[in-house]
Length: 358
Image (cartoon, rainbow, N blue to C red):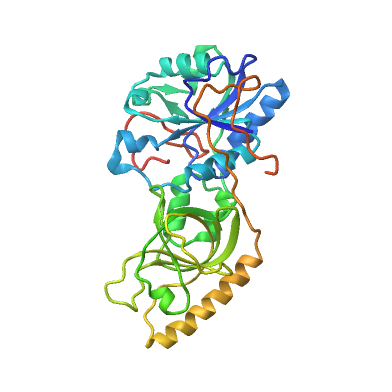
């Protein structure tokens, strides 16, 4: 299993063709999973590679920056989830102004036919693509270049459509358990450790202050139980989101206390958090001693919650930027140990429509 950046070096990579699904796949929720699983089934039956083509940044960041949605997971985690669903190759296509100008016909010819030699394209039944969203499932079928499989929207047990927009709404409302059910896992966030005010250390709980590595969705203010990944290690963590009202002029940010991590300099290192449960809101205490006692309770509860759930280590290899291909040429291998519609297809190119389900 592999991933590469851009389709430019892929001509001839799939001499026998491939099955491809495409989209932003923000969060890789259960609707996306249905598309990927259908792609893998078709590919395995025909003996060709299964390919997921995703776009970075989100098309809205180029076409309508003021409407760009906060992302539901870092790019590396998006790639990892797609690989774990069974695709053979993930292609991360840079979404640029020039790329956004491709007409639907040009996209079919340049990307799907010449670039990927697609034999099957699997999308949602309301899929739109191309400049000004001029292409549809019908456009794909009329090309006659490949088989087109259009899946109906995926719904949850209550009959509500699953979309990245809905997952964002649930997380923003603090409904983590419902969001986790649609994502198929706890919400994942990542940041780089930066300098903070040092208050946690003074209270006996040195925290890692984090700045997001991408424009990621931030959960509501509060204290959370998390798993935190630092390099190849994972630790239970008590995480504070937002400005603690106990201290004047405190900055609103994400701070993580990694339980069991020896105290040492983490500045500049990346930390990935998986939000398991909200323990309590931010609140003001009558004294610093009261706050310290509450922090001890938070840490104890966070450790219990994290220990009851799977320890998730994320492993994503570096991407190849040379001239990758499937089989004969070098691809980035995953270690052996390891715009969207309601069902996950993107509405690519053109302005997002009324609250666009991305």
